Length: 101
Image (cartoon, rainbow, N blue to C red; front, side):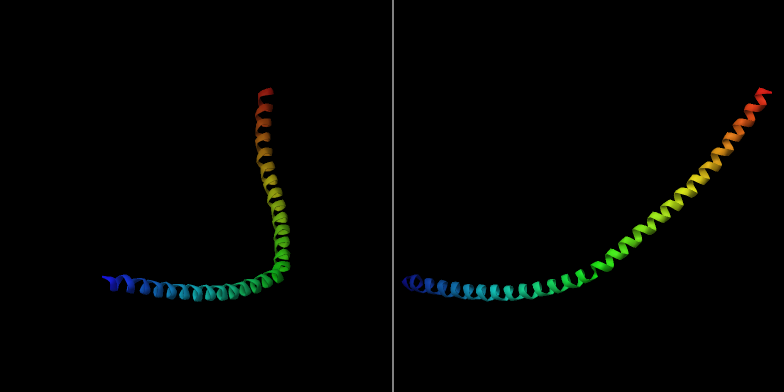
């Protein structure tokens, strides 16, 4: 029993030292990995900033195309609406004229 009381704390201390060393090694590897990831993210950021001008041009162009197509659709819709309302008015006028006579 006294052997276990003297030997067990030594085993626990050795295991704690091993766990501490493994934790330190893992922390250092994580820091190295995070540094590499940061370099990759910075590189991607630079490439995206280089393409921002192109994206801006594409965005402006699509906005102008949408504006033109909206105007065309609006004018065609107004033309069709005028055709249908003109036909209804002429039918009503014809009915109104026949009632007046």
